[in-house]
Length: 341
Image (cartoon, rainbow, N blue to C red):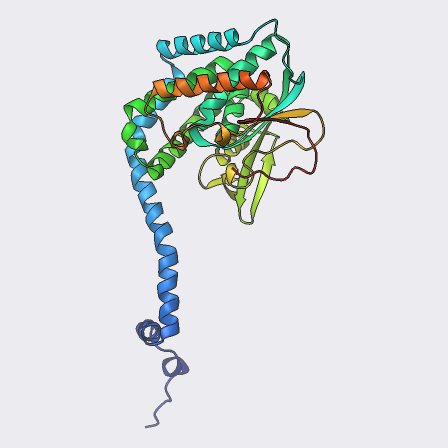
């Protein structure tokens, strides 16, 4: 009987088990490939472990997030009263008889800086008094990360609600202090609460009128990861697009119009205007003289109030001619490049 030859497949194709073993043996026995395997593992393991840690840690944030949303919806009376007192203080700092060397028309740029943004809250309260007294007018706002959040919230929610909800977050610091006990936990917590804030604004405020108020009024910096580049957003076409832009300027790994994006401060921390329309006031939060720990946390509301008051006082000094610090008034021209915090 004639025997049939072995099939080509069985003769030439190793089994999957043998293939895996040979690859492992090759990696184990070849020093160069061993180094490559170890190097790849060392590169991939830390991001993977971080990703797993973030997923697990987020599960612990439900109580603080629910509390934050409740504060957004119904700010406590004592916080509302505190805001009134701070605004009265800002008003008292402005002397009706004093002539301030300050532009009648300007654009406002606030840098990134995490929770140092409470300093800019004090600046905004004094600036609001100047506007009320017809001493200046702000045409456009620009910022990255927390600096963009401040301007976005101001235009979408209005002054008082923006100020009150910002101050209310001081209660989160007090009640959930363990969530800010190190930089990593604080960053994850702030990121998760930022997302809750975006959801709240989308549900309550981001209608057609709000989108119109934002468009060509609020410019926010975001970082596109692939390829690594900066994008400045000033047009808001829908609730979902505006929400994604808001998230991308301060959160980690957001899908913005099909592209992976992250905190805008990484590629332009204080996006300056360049079209020669008018002068611009730059508020660089990292030059405010505050303790760097306030980038990520506060002990509570009392510390926050001190920072807001410092923002008020420093800005009034600037109005009176004291140079330097966190403030600059610059022209607007093409030569301005990106700004790194």
